[in-house]
Image (cartoon, rainbow, N blue to C red; front, top):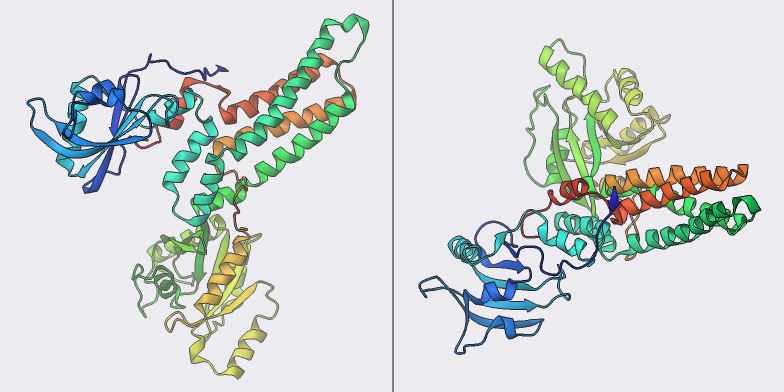
Length: 474
């Protein structure tokens, strides 16, 4: 492991180019060029309208209208060229961005012309990697760029945007700097070990260690929420056959995704789809109905139902109000056993077919059940909003505000756990009055793991793994 060089590249890297808009035809496409020769290479294929000017002579943050010319002088397209000057660009290098018409042929032709005039095709995430290497963003902010692109809900958008703005990094860097100052004093004591002096106030160091432990613990704990928001909350739809699970899934999805039939055992395998409810992504899993059967294939589906219950965070247990099974105790035992510790919502379906006095009978049958209860009709779309509210409540996900720091990256979470273990050893060492050399070692380990998150300490292998997951052109 080594400290990553954050200094400007100063033209030592090749000039790169790529299409930065999504694949396919569209109204417009954006082609990005970055590197010390971005302007000079672009000048070879771009001609101003009615003038002999050059992009190389233009100031940053300026837009210019002109033509892209092929090698024989033919016009390929009319485009807008935007110039960004180093170091005031996304990558920290000279950058030119062409906005052209979205024809696949035009995009391909412009890219070919740039490459034939000296540019190299960018690798996945290479623009963002250059921004990181040139000190424009740290590693956690770079990863947030990918999360922002992939965001599909308001919550994931806010989470990624807050991290990209650097709130997470600022907090960690402040803690890291204070630890570095203290470890410097602790290590200075080693040079005067024979004189038995202390340059670092142990009480102040302990207060700092406790503060860091609380902060790191809070950030690590936020991963549960962050992971849920990023990947969705798994919700298992379970119950006996023909209670309306597939009908409810289709209603939530607003499409006919699952087969609905009066025939028992229609659903043999789990069907999984995602739905955004109030900015939270739920992964609904329609499972095979639970019942006693001799059908081998259906029993395999029921066994998968049990597995999905164990893998879910929330269980929607659907019950047909018009036909409460005599096997309810048998069913309760099998569902509750696998749903232990999870949020269970009892969903009484087909409520439109019951009279008020019959609803009271249903309530008495399940009076010992402590979970949330919702009465709906999936077919008639009655009270489905109440079910959605119950799901949001069961998710226990608070709304994200601007500035909230939520950890959603597994790499960050693992580094935070290592940091937390190291700072606990620092606190234990201070309480045990261990020697300065052992204390310094634990502090340095803490500093190291914080640096792993922001990229002050990393390796080319880690960087390659992170940026290889980016799309080309970003």
